Length: 173
Image 1 (cartoon, one colour):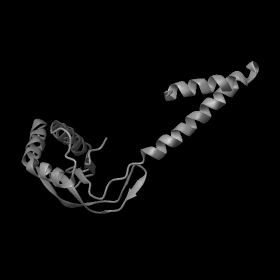
Image 2: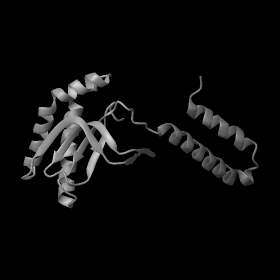
Image 3: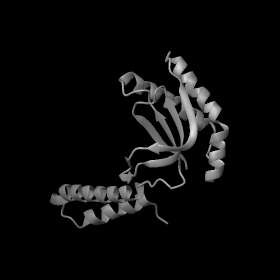
């Protein structure tokens, strides 16, 4: 079986043999642009991510919308993400994933608190795993309605700022 690259290469060789040499460069350019556009449409059509109904999200809510508090949120997000990555692959089922996350809530809280202490922030982090409210969100070209979704929620300080979130289970790729 030929690989995709070999097929594309032989396709262009056959097409260019049919085109007079004076028109070869413009014709090849048009073919290349058309092929790239087609490939882009196929890739985009396949890249649409749908968040499953049994997903467990992670949501980190900043203390406020100030530039400083938003940078604190990103710092906590990086530290917590590193922690979660250290757990290895998420389990295969929703219930197993929930139990894993629930068993590590204190660890998540400790890492979030350490991240805050490392940059001398005086407020704390609250960590819960529960059905929590989410605002309406457009994610990967899809509209997700506002509602309560299961999430590992980390609230920093007053929790009055913009949030960051992604899907924790099944793991984002």
